[in-house]
Length: 443
Image 1 (cartoon, helix red, strand yellow):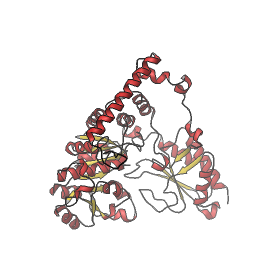
Image 2 (tube, one colour):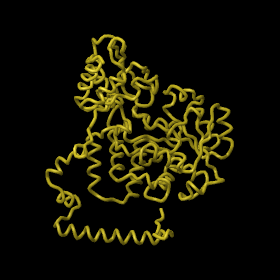
Image 3 (cartoon, helix red, strand yellow):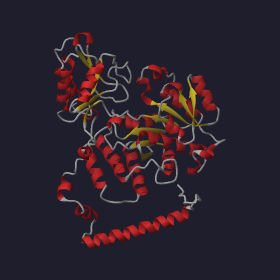
Image 4 (cartoon, one colour):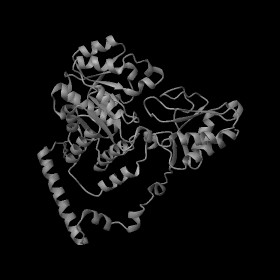
């Protein structure tokens, strides 16, 4: 990005870079002087010397300091609930990475190569979440189709190829991640629509919402499956992107879709993979992931504001290792046991029935459904949700609670949906007790 002077004129990149270099050189002189003053050589020792032993061991509880109350997450890996908690192995890697500076470009490249090798694909990029991956995928495909510079997007692509083909049933809020690059969406419904759109000659990419077939309503009306979608696009030499943000587990999905032929696949890092919430992965063909790297921070492309720090990059590498240390069975942990414990807590309440369901695609883990008749219990779904939220600790149920069937969860107006996989040890017992109290306390 170019800086601006007070008069509004644009500084040259070389001038800005020299100034930046001088300021950084001054910083390193200062840091060296500080290290000498403190009589500590290693960087890690410097960090430790500036913190008290108690602070290093425990750390201050900033949630308490800020007055933000932790909740019990009986919902799932939703961004609004800060998604998953990192396992100890990933957290340790993040903390260690925080102690040492590296060259960011080197780290991005080496991390991408390592992840690609482990996940059986040509190339990989650690991104700022799945939405950031969609933007970088779009930028890469725009550049690939038009042979343009990274700084031509989004404004200088008028008259060039700029269409992303999407099934009407797959339109969603993440279309904005595509628009950021200057691309526009061409909607298709039928296979004939799709063939015409691909043959028009102005498409740079197609986008397929992977979990749509497990949705209800409009998303379930999509007429074109993955294999046919790939075949038609590739017949016209158009790259295909797949949004699989929440679609791990199963672990094998991390290579199934690239193996199927999708040129680029986006995953969230902070959901089932248990990496940092503000990270994700873009996997696929190396010619495209290399272009995504070029558009990524800290360059001047679309990804400049989608910064992924060294801690998040290392965290995602560690998350990949953590995931691959599991089998499909061990990845499910004790989720069913948690669901069974909560179900047993509400057993015997008049009209209450329970069942466990596992969505087919997104959030492919056990979810507990608690069905009841409000005419018998004397309380409604909304009253129960309010009681759980307003209690201490606050409990958040899955957002499909009280809703029509969706996302592979057959709920209804009188169904509580409990996502058990983000619960911390002992929280399943608390959730079961609190739901029982809410169901048996008439309004």
